[in-house]
Image 1 (cartoon, rainbow, N blue to C red):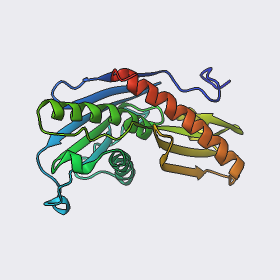
Image 2: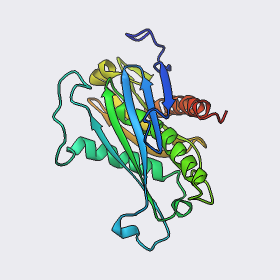
Image 3: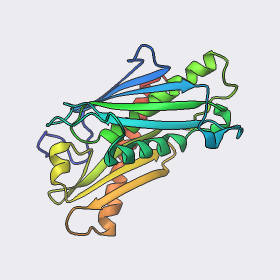
Length: 237
């Protein structure tokens, strides 16, 4: 058993509340244990310069942590995101674009804003998982407004952390586990069981192909459970 009583292959308690941000075209308040993320989707009738006259739209993301979302106060990113935030928001954007038909979206942009209200490990994974719900609702809003002829989402997508903690492969690490993990990995997968991104690092000793296989199996289990909850939240199950 882990310090919080979970089994090695068990997710933290999860909830997703769609429509949390009243004025956003799509939004989701996702809570995974003590990690709480507010994710919103904003639709704009424009595209970046490199997409003009392409017939395609764009999906991008921004990520930040509120000053006391963590154990210490972090500085507000007033001028530009720090290196960590840039890396995470690029990951979120790549993940979302992998399941969007950009041609069906047309020449418009959807910006996903992911803000950590409370951070206890796994904020980037929670962002991606919540972003699917927010993005789905923003596309549904566009369909209702007769802006789209075809629904642009191809399939659900989710993300979860896995790692090696005290010589055991575990699913969905919280901050205490993540800060002491021998291996830390993030797995982004689609409903079809395909990988979008795998980010894994040995913090000390290198890990074996066998350990990698066990972690990927745990990651698939976690993503499957998260996608089932996304579908339930959206009334698709």
